[in-house]
Amino acid sequence: MNKQFIIFIILIFFNFARAQEKPIIGWIDNNALNISNSNQTNDINIPFDRMSEKFKNARIYGFGEASHQHKDFFNLKTKFFKYLVINNNLKILFLEESFGGAYSANKYVKNGEGNPVEIIKNFRQGFLHTSEMLSLIEWIKTYNESQTIQNQIQIYGMDCMFNYNIVSILESIFQENNFELKSNILELFKKYKVEKFEPYKIKEITAEISQIQSVQDSIKNISLFKNKQDALNGLEALKSYITFMNEPTQNIRDKNMADLIFYASDFKKAFISAHNYHIQKTELPPKTSIPSLGNWLEKKKWLKILFSRFRFWCW
Image 1 (cartoon, helix red, strand yellow):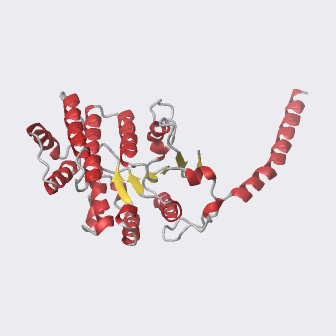
Image 2 (cartoon, rainbow, N blue to C red):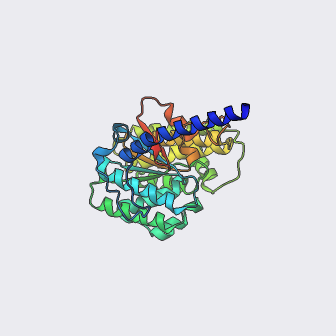
Image 3 (spheres, rainbow, N blue to C red):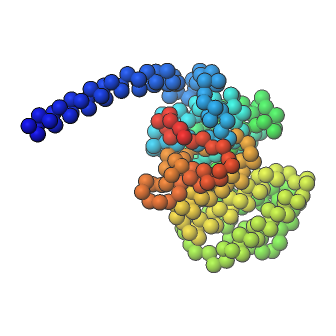
């Protein structure tokens, strides 16, 4: 009797599930957006008015990938990046890359300075050493050539694990502006000019952060300062690196990346390209209670933020 009852329940559940199937499939058919393929050279041919109001009105878009090593993820992200540039005034691309590496790419897309092949090779994240990344940079450069300086796309590196070229970039900007640095800042720059990957405790971290902040405050008060935003962002990236090296945890890394995005985005529409663990708005990795980059940004409730993990759903 019990066996017959269990079979009866299973049959009811199966029929119920089949009854629910048609409405679900119908909803998917009516709302699905046809991407056609993952080739980044082919545009997304979807009228922008078909997008949800949440998607259209978002200021920061986060697109993730389940693995850094698969080009289909990167190409799909690139297609959406181009789509948002053309249709929704997107102006900033944040990469899971060093500030210094992305800075060289930014100079190339803005004024053609440098060799893009060598720039890609110097990225600190090996998964960006690809022809797909090169194609994206060339596309941005071509797009920028038709724009005013104010409307050009910027590329920023947000990953605080690296101090690659930060000090050299800052020294060049300060020299261009005849901006004199105090002896303590010169010593600090000397300390961090050498690229370091080993975590280490920094006894003077509070003092060093305060010293860098004082330089930022001075620059903000100078009305005519060439490449002011680059200088401010570079100093922010240096602070981010110092705090991470003093406490090299995923919690600090994702918080610092979120802070740099918030600092550098300057209220413009921005696109974040990173791993799913960073993009998701919960924790990373799952069941660790460590806030992700997306979670840190979500805490800034007055921002309109949209994130997508590459299954084409968003929240």
